[in-house]
Image 1 (tube, rainbow, N blue to C red):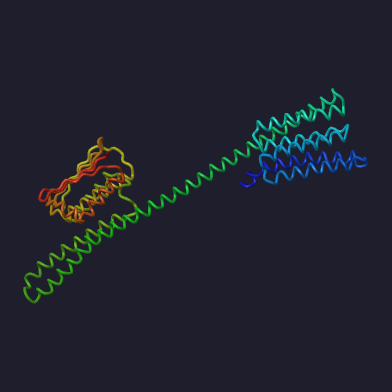
Image 2: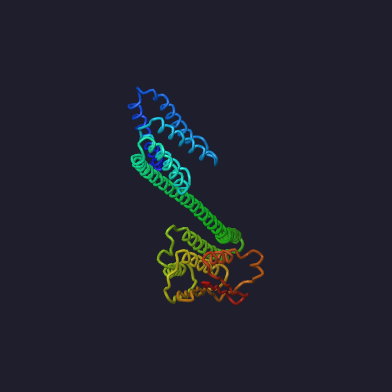
Length: 387
């Protein structure tokens, strides 16, 4: 369908020109088949046709078009003078007008059409006299103008079609690039999440299981040395197992395809706090102020930051209490704090702050500013504010 639409105007042009030329040739055949001038007229008409067809095939250089138009005009004038009393050869000027309207600037084509109008007057006046010749000339001039206008309309339609096709191609290219970019973003996000989960497994669950192994070995050795201390080791082993289960559940919670923030950030954090209350002995004070809407990207990133901050409280702070403040009114900000043992920024600078680095990256992705306040023995406060 697209191919037909693009070439239809060209084929209509050729069909119109061929039909007009065929009508002229047929009229000449009927009128002059027994006339001595027949072969001369046939030769001139054949030469005109051959030149016209050749012009559509060979490359048109700057000098070629004027030479072509002058040569074709001379052939038409010769046909009109040779066939004195037959005006229909003047219709060939109409085909020329259609051709040049397809090939060159419309203003220049109009100038050439004006020249054709002047040229066809002389042989028609010569054949029919002044008044009749002028009358016939005006008929063919108006016919040529009509054909030229038709050719111009087809040219405009073709140019509009080609422009629309160009726009469509560019839009398809843009859509394809956008899809590729979106796919790359998804791949990067997936790779970042896999890296985050791998680090979490290594830094939390793997270490906990390793500690459980050491505790089990210690309990086995104490069976023969001090059986009373075995109970203490088993209790320690039970605590480590519970901690490992809690960490695994938190990681599985992150992999849930139905992201918890689909019902809003506040609801997601409430649910997460309830889960932590059931899984451990961390007491979390949650304060929510305002209900300003957040974009899905903002809600997801802020939830992950809060989740990471609470995981750090459980694993590193030594505190059983934490506080979360959601300030969902202008200015928008979120704050997570604890009164634990804090940390040394020197250790973080030496590569032990993967979780904190991830939080900064998430905040930067949504255009929020993250600020961390921490000193050994003074707890940690994480403040995220919209810039």
